[in-house]
Amino acid sequence: MDGIMLYGKINDGNYDFQTSVKGSDFEDTRPRVNAKLTEVREYYAYYMYAGKKVGKQSEIIRVVLNPIE
Image (tube, rainbow, N blue to C red):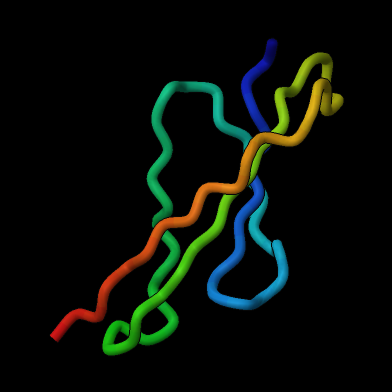
């Protein structure tokens, strides 16, 4: 496998974030929409092989970012 293709969205938006990940860790460096409100980020992935998605979509992972006061 060549890694994974990771897709993400913030709150109730569209899955408009896409990046390839080749290592075992990922850090989402996108800024928060509003640091004073709770933010939910969702991600799913596909394995990549020879530049193409293979296998089934992963489960969706939800990460809740609490407000920063």
